[in-house]
Length: 142
Image (cartoon, rainbow, N blue to C red):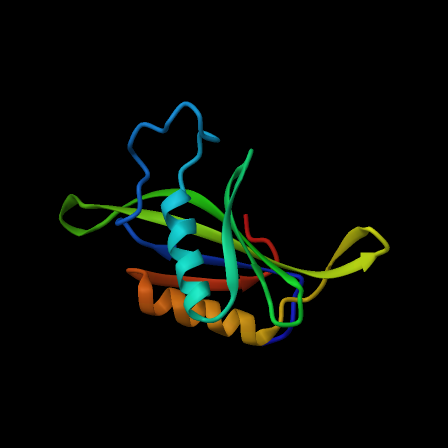
């Protein structure tokens, strides 16, 4: 795989919520349960990670062994009609990677290419733990 600044990963998994009423004190976005699952999978891979709540939705941030930051943005992408009238939930992840540098008392983050090994790890985690892996594309696919 060629190193890219970002990747988009799509998968289907109807075990994650896209319908219930959202709490009023939240960011009003679905995907928290997906972010929690991804955090758990990254922690199992040895990447210390945490779920982040943003105005646009949910994310997962992990610190890599080289002290850089892996950011995964979780987007509920919609519903697909499956066989027998069942509904499938489509999810999209955006994967970004930032080099972290300290300048005196301040930290600086510069977006850099996502390493191939991290993309492979993510693909393996999603393929093994989610219902249907659809695709992984370099760049932003909207």
